[in-house]
Image (cartoon, rainbow over all chains, first blue to last red; front, side, top):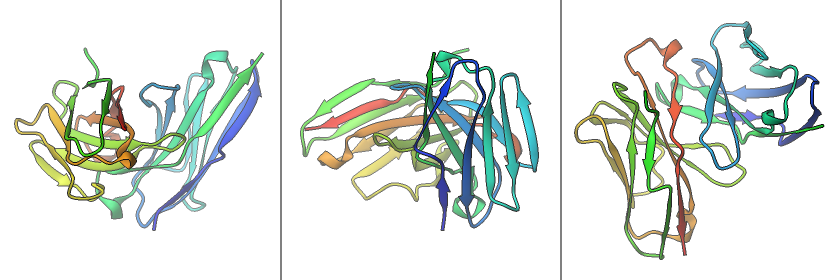
Length: 112
Length: 117
C-alpha cells in the first residue's frame, strides 16, 4: 500500500529555521515533491528529489533518504508569508507512472 | 506565459444535479491531471490524461464521474447526480509530459470549489 505521514501543524518564529518531516511507504518510488499551498490557493511547486541527498534552492532545501523512506523540507530565514500548508507528495511507480500520492499537509504558522 | 486556469472558481449546485468543471492547461503540456482536495487533506488523484486519452482513471470514485480531453488541450470533469459528499475543491494540473520521469513536474490551477447542497 501507500502511506505518507507528515506533522499536522507546526509553528515557528520569523527569521528562524524550521524542518518539516515526511515519511513514506510505497510499492515503488520515482521521486518526491514538496508543494506550498496558501489557504484557498493552488499548490505551487517547491522542490523535487529522486536521488539521496540535499537539494538547495534559496531559502528552501529538501533532503531525501530512499533507504529510510524519509524526506524533509528545510525553510531558513522564515518570513510571515511562509505561513502556509506544505504538501509532501510521492510519485509511486506501482500506482501509475505519473500519479502523485499526497500527504495531508503540514500547516505552518510563522509568528513575529 | 499563462498558468493552468480553471472555471468556474466556485460552483454551488443542488443534490442530484449535473455539473461540468473546466481546465485549461499550460500551452504545450501534453499531460493533464485532475485531483480532489477536501478540507485539511492533500489532493487526491482522480484521473490522468496523456494527450487525448485517459492513461489512468483509477482514482475516479465511481461511475458518476467522467472526464474528457477531446483535442488534447482543454479538459472537462463531469459529475452526474451530485451528492453532498462530492463537495470539495477540484484541482487540475498539467505537466510537459515529454520528459523523463525525473523532471516531469506538475503545475496546479487555482481549483474549482464545488458545493453540493
